[in-house]
Length: 122
Image (cartoon, rainbow, N blue to C red):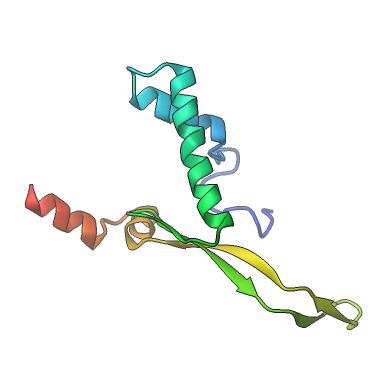
């Protein structure tokens, strides 16, 4: 039986996590004029730019993919569900992701309105 954190789509054993290496290989494969070292450098620079913007609290919007935001959470009182003991939770910043309608539609096997409009123009 799958755990709650595991996706339930597809038969067991067919799921694969996209790793940093897989993404790097995709960049390398899509740009044959670049060496593997150059592709890695470009990929790492893109990740560094995204990371540094988020560390500074800036939102990162990737069209047709989604929006990464940093939210500040205030200090609050939490409760241990097992014992019922109240515990203070310190203020912190959390990273959130809001997928674009295009990505949501793609995940659900549909064509998003934005993609449909783009294809009508060509």
